[in-house]
Length: 158
Image (cartoon, rainbow, N blue to C red):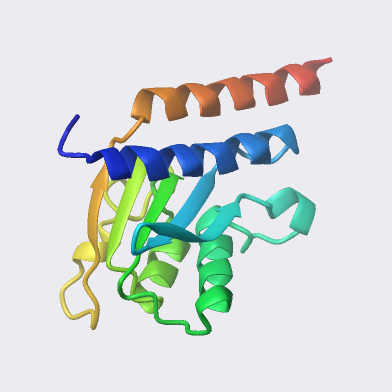
C-alpha cells in the first residue's frame, strides 16, 4: 500500500469521483478534494473547457471551494488529494494556500510540478513546506486518463 492509510484511500476515491464527473462532462478527468479534520471541505474537477479558462484546474477549484467554506485563504491544517500530480501553477497555489499535505494519484511527465518536471515543493527558501506522496491508485487513474484521451482522438478521427 506504499504507506497510504485507509483514510488516504477513502479521500482519493472521492477525488476519483470528481475526475469521473469531469470526464462525463467532456473535461479531462482530474479531480481533487481538500480535507480538514477528516472531512471534505472543498471539491474540484477540471473545468478548463466549460469555463474557458486555463486556470480552471481541479486543485485551484477545490482550494477556492475550501477557502470559501471556511472563510480563510489559509488551509494550513489541510490535505489535498488529487488524481494527477499538480502542475507548476497548482503547486504554487498549494504553497500560497499553505496546504500541509498533498497526496496525488499518478505522475504527469509533461507538466508535473511536484516530482516529474520540477520539484516545486522542495525549493529551498520558500516560506511554506508541503509534504507530498504520490502513487495512490496510480494504475486506475492512468487507465482512466488513457481511456479519456483515446475517446477524444477517436471522436476527432470520425
